Amino acid sequence: MAITPQWKDELRARITLSTLVMRSVKLTRAGREWKGCCPFHDEKTPSFYVNDQKQFYHCFGCGAHGDAISWMVDQQGLQFMDAVKELAASAGMEVPAPDPAMARRAEARASLIDVTDAAQAFYVASLAAPGGRVAREYLERRGFSAAVCREFGFGWAPDDRQAIPKALSQFGEDMLEGAGMRAANDQGERYDRFRGRVMLPIQDARGRVIAFGGRILDKRDGVAKYLNSPDTELFDKGRTLYNLHRAAPAARQSGRVVVVEGYMDVIALANAGIADAVAPLGTALTEMQLELLWRMVDAPVLCFDGDAAGQRAAMRAIARALPLLAPMRSLNIVRLPAGLDPDDLIKAQGKAAMERLLASPANLIDTLWEFERDAQPLATPEAKAGLKARLMAHVETIADPEIKGLYRRELSDRFSAFAYPPRPPRPAFQPGQRQPWRGGSPPPPPGLSESARVQLSGMMAGGQRQGLLTAVIAGLTRFPQEINRHAEALSSLARLDREAASLIESLFELAETLDSRGLSAICSAQGHPAPPADIRYAFLDEGNDPGAACEELAEAVSLLVERPALEAALAATISRFDSDPEGSFAEQNRLRTQLTAVEERLKAFGRRKASQSATDDNAA
Image (tube, rainbow, N blue to C red; front, side):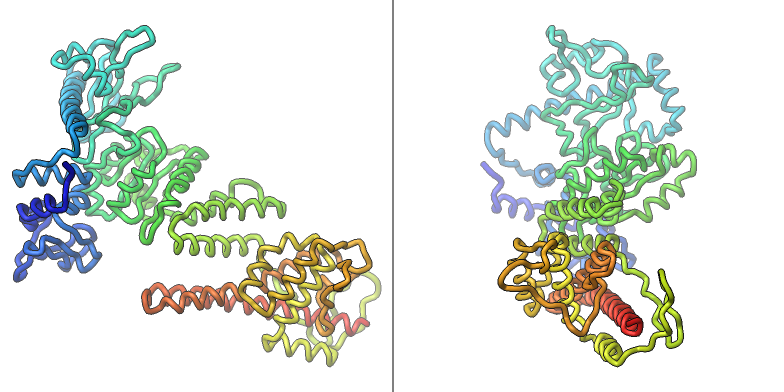
């Protein structure tokens, strides 16, 4: 029998929600409701209300909303079925078993919990016994206080292959092996999985011992430093976060959860008074672990070593997170100084140094950009193109369409600023000033010709763009090898600018017949677009250096494409003002700032070309 909506309604009816909430939140009567400070965000004025008649809670500050079951899941950190079972037990209801097989598995799990509880008691007693002296000395050297050792349940596994069956004789071999306490070799000999190790219990969200982790005291060849229980009916390492049952309540107070690399890092932070830390268990963060973290906070803080291994771990976590990103759901990343783990940093610089790092983490997109930018040298156009390809490959994994579009725009902007930085404008020509001359006799002092003055006035008035487009097309017919380089940008321009579309499409249609060795750049009966008669650009000048001309051509393409793209983005942002006024307003400001910058670049480009044209006219 499955859990039906009717059964859940009966469960809610038997639970007084305000009584449940008041176990952890102070509430006061407010008419027919109860009110208090919200446990899901930091506030001083109560905005959290509980309504027993309607059987829900609601926060007018952060929007938290739910019933008794969601309270146990979101505030207590339980899995759905665990929350249902706990509420049903308090309400005197039987939880319907989904089917007989599931019921048998639940019974087996309950029996295995007895095994792990007994094993934990044995390990704790072994630590306190004379045989645990070396382990106690190790914990003292690590600086772990007695209170922290008790809280985290440190124990000791004697270096004895048969210690567990002797101590837990009430359980058969099958149960001991089913709980992950015993293993067998190829010869069928059974032995204790954990021997000669400092032991830590691994607990579920309810604080029940479901597995163990053990650390050796001295480095030994061929022996793993850390050893965790295998996956069992109780324990799935990909769905478990170490210390979750302690960190979840602390995270509700701090508004933060810190993810470190291992459980000893968690305990080092707790020893220093930082209680909101968890760790995966010997694997990279999984999708399920990320979901557990996002239930607690919008942006968990991932804390990694600053070395290359830490960088790779951060990128693995980011790659797992990208497909799962959603509005108000992201990651923050802290990189420790190279060679230091949290324990080392705290011992060397104190808790304040760790808190400073946690208070100013990098966000996900900054970390992604910096990692890929620094992944390899970017000295060639091909390497730069590889950077863009890697960034866009990450973007394509994002499932949420809005976030994908924003990431694509932001990373494209960063790439353009990096790969095509604006060149410093050349000094404007002043009458009577001599221009630098590379060879031969310097020309006489030039004056501004009438045609150049008209051209400059047109550019300054903003009418230069259509002439620039025509010049770019003509430049590409002169340098046909550059068409592939700019094909994506020009295609984007054609989609956004109908006036430019026909010219760009004609260029692409003729691209296969381009031959830069011929007298005409396009060898076809249709001919090719003529250069504009009234505008001069270096990439149209036969005497100019081809490399410099191609770079100037690239700058011109960038200027052509950026403005209509920004205008389209601005129009889309304005259209959603009614549904998201605050976000739309902020995005409009950002886009208008970028548009102003593009306009200034376009004007500077035009002034520079007009100045060069004037110089050439006077030289002639």
